[in-house]
Image (cartoon, rainbow over all chains, first blue to last red; front, side):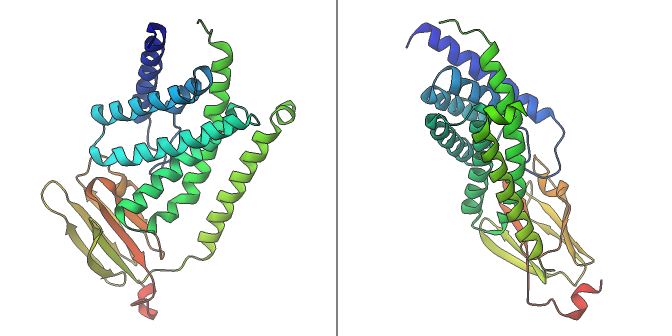
Length: 162
Length: 125
């Protein structure tokens, strides 16, 4: 692995970690699971500036590090499921070439929330969580638009030094 | 709007997702019904069922893993918990069939069930 790549991984992962921490400081938005998804800024940026595989590695590193630093083991399954579904869908949409970072990030936001709920339903063996789905669905869309717009600007403005 | 022209597919995707989410919400809201009793599950096992028509307070779990569930006026609410995130406490009261309070750290689900016990006096409180 080239040194420049190691540095890029480190930088973006660190940024994602800081954004995760920053988000944990924000006041809760009423319904559990409703959040901005700030770390996704770094992931969408990585998806566009680097590539899908790199974004997956950075996302996985973020999830594991956040769990070690602030989280608990139980939350790991939800985080991994959300991140995996989100990245799969974002990768697919980006590959079609029909969407900008906004559309890609919106799909990622919704998929992230849906993935977490599905795993929670499976782990807790209950279908009762379906109630959260429409709320998190819409909040994921709104958050995805915001993250998509900002990361689009970032990809455009941050100089790319190879 | 300039943005709409250059991001037509994005706009369609966003609109479609919003409509779908809204439709799901409207469907769940329109079909909601007052619950008859709450079912308490810990670790996937149903440990107790309590009628919503009887006011009561129970302490669920053991040392270091407790949630205090209060039933009052046909609603159920976790008023106190020693979990790190306090999401179950902040969620407030539930009363409609299918609603639930979840405490992920303690693997606790309190869900409102319909039917049984939801006779005439279930809703008078």
